Amino acid sequence: MLSGVSVDVQIKYKICDNKIIKIWKREKEKEAKSLKMCGILCSRLPWCRAITACPAGTGGYNCQFHYGVYFAACQSFRSDLNCKIMIETTKNTEPISAEGCANGGIWNGTNCRCLDGFASPKCERYIKDCEEGADLGYKNKPGQWDYVTTLTWSTGAPYPFETFCNYNDGKTIMFYRGFGVPINWNRTWQEYKYVLTETNEAYWMGLENIHYLTNSGTHQLQIYFTRFADSNLFGQFFYKNFKVGAESTDYQLSYSSLEVVKEPYGLQDGEPDSNTLGPINGSRPFCTWEKPGCSSALQNGGWWHDAFATQYSLTKPMEPVTVHYHGEDVQVNSISFQVYDNSRS
Image (cartoon, rainbow, N blue to C red; front, side, top):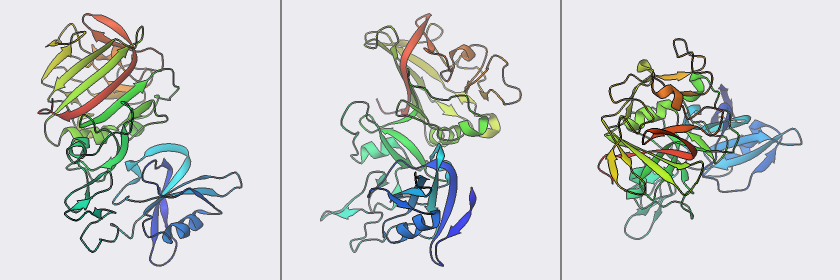
């Protein structure tokens, strides 16, 4: 992160290198000769709270303006090698309406109707997770898999972070990988701590964010996959009381029980015939290729590893990857990890 850039005596921006914001846009991007000019343009928009500045062909920047970004850190957003983001640091909320609605909320005669990602009753804060968004009536985009990107702020987290939400089911997308789309999973420990995504076909929530999400209440992890040989065939794993520890534990993964959907439907106990994250009582620290003490079997990518789970790393560069399902290794066409409250069906 570069030092703050002051546009004038009243407005300052935190500059984050190699980052991009993909949400909450109100106007088409505008070209500017410098980052300072991007800031000046933003200052003329009463709702503008952040800027994505990407190189323009003329040598300046294409400036995209964003609303609704408050208390965010550089780590809140995904990486992009070409762009920078500018986060305003002098205003922590939009002007509150005469009826008391904050952050762009609109009074409908009885209460505040909040913009996507903000919570009632006055729209004064971000939703805690995607489940809260679903309970507030937020919906996915048209189409079954068109998840919504927003900011959430988990209990205990030091900042809000970019999140993929499946509002239709009240689930937070922790990891998603489609195949046949190139993405570099060969990242460092530091990179795996935060949001990773390069295309709509791959997303990693970030170890820090997964830790805060799974330690605010009791959660279940659902792993849903389609088979490589026939994308109409699917399988599901359900890990109860799923948690990821803090960095001081190397983001240790734990869960209390496992159930598996037996095709075509029906739940059954999964261990040992179906599993992909290792045994219940296993020690599963997260590993990356360059982290000291990690298994030499891990050549690239990053995953939770023990003697069982190493072979089922889902960030391997080769395709297709495999999961252990009903006693056999099944090649996977696409796979998603979704986290939600234990009480939600």
